[in-house]
Length: 378
Ligand code: GLY
Image 1 (cartoon, rainbow, N blue to C red):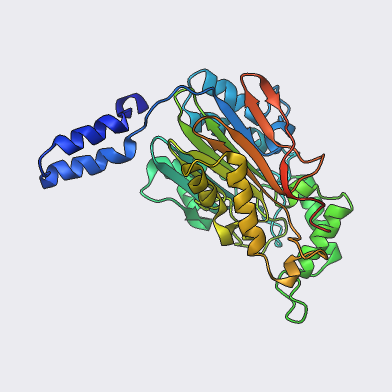
Image 2: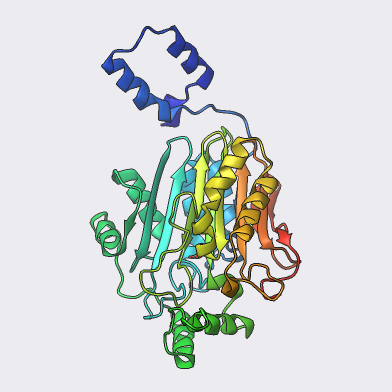
């Protein structure tokens, strides 16, 4: 479909300047065609994701980045390929931060968020607080393909999915996610609201204790997969999918399904997406900011670091700062530009924090570049 719409921007501009003042009909046709201008350029394909894209295989032979890269190399639409890639961790019961078996909300219900963006088509779709469907990325794609909307939430999203033929299950918990939720409930009354005296969320603190004790994988607490890719003709797409913050207030939506926060893609410019504390990202719309830095020519690493700096500057509440006065949370961005350059950046780097990458050289797990030394706890 893109072939039909591959119109060189330069020739379109030249045609436009040679035309007399357009009639309403001509103006309409120019407006309709404009979003589909995609200037193909030869690029070595790249797929980048957070570590879930390499850590989980759902019992199969390939990780998410590997699957997506193979499909792109075979000529599959880039967004279709990326979604096939993230379907692997979404369906893997061992991955407790994404899709089936994701850690549930404070009521024990798994609620999933996702969005996707197609660069060349200038199209996007998303779902939030979706229950009962293991692969929210496919529902986000269905919103993009079949509706005039960009975001459906809650029961409306589930009804839409059912009507589109998705199987709706009663419960997406696995024995593991349910047992971890029970452990959390055993430890604390569900006081997710701020204690007015200390402005602390007690339930959240207990959740982090479970991370520190090794009961809950740190990556699963805000567990998310963002996966971005570029095809050989320069087509850039992205998808983000998550079960969101563990033990969240029912209905809480993080950054993942929000265009400009959990994901942003601009054809001919680049893509960025995130994992980590969604609230910090929502406040700063970091993925949009990163792509705008790419648009001005920044390298993906510098663009990502600039967004992390912005998040750091805007983190002023005492409850969100560690004893060094720095953000007491992590946030990570996966950035890809139209030349196929890429970077994985994090608020805190460490020798154990890597991201997923697949290029013609195969799968790699490079270390994330950190803005700050140390860790969220100090
Ligand atoms: N970044 C995932 C979330 O906060 O929901």
